[in-house]
Amino acid sequence: MDIKEILEYLPHRYPFLLVDRVVTVEPGKAIHAYKNITMNEPYFVGHFPHHPVMPGVLIVEALAQAAAILAFKTNDTKPDANSLFYFVGIDECRFKKPVMPGDQLHLHVETLRQMRGIGKFKAEARVDGQIAAEAILMCAKRDI
Image 1 (cartoon, rainbow, N blue to C red):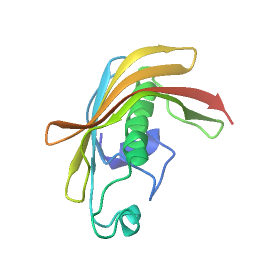
Image 2 (image 1 turned 45 degrees about the horizontal axis):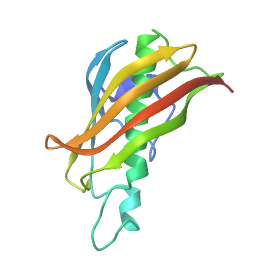
Image 3 (image 1 turned 90 degrees about the horizontal axis):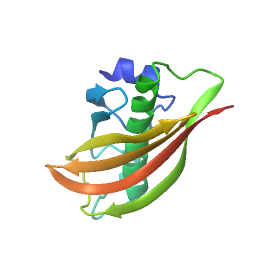
Image 4 (image 1 turned 120 degrees about the vertical axis):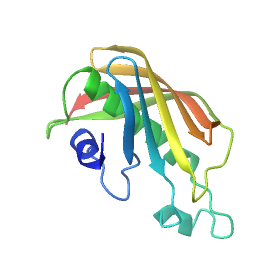
C-alpha cells in the first residue's frame, strides 16, 4: 500500500501519521509496514537536540497505526466519520534499541484475537533486523 491508500485507512495526518508504506498485509493475520525516520521530524527539536531519539510512545503509536490498518483490512472496512479505532491497552511493552534519524522503522504486527470490534495484537518495531520495541496492543472500534 502506498501513502494514498494508507490515508484511506488512517485518520491521522502530519505530523501524527506514522506509517509511510505497507509492505505486506494478510487480513486476519499480519502486517509489515515501515516509517522512514528523518531529522525533519518535529519531535527531534526537543527530544533530544544533542542526541536525537524517537520517543518510545511514538514508536508504540506507529505500531498501533499499523494494527489499525490490519484491523480494517481484516474486517474489509474503512474508517468513516462516525467511528475510530482507539488505542485501549498496552501490555508487556519493552524498548530495546533507540531509533534515530536515518533509521527505517519496520512495523510487524500479528493478530492474536479480534472480535466484537476489539483487537489484540503482538507488535514489534525493528531497525536493521533488531528489535527496537515490542508490545501487546489492544485497539477498539468506537462510535464517535
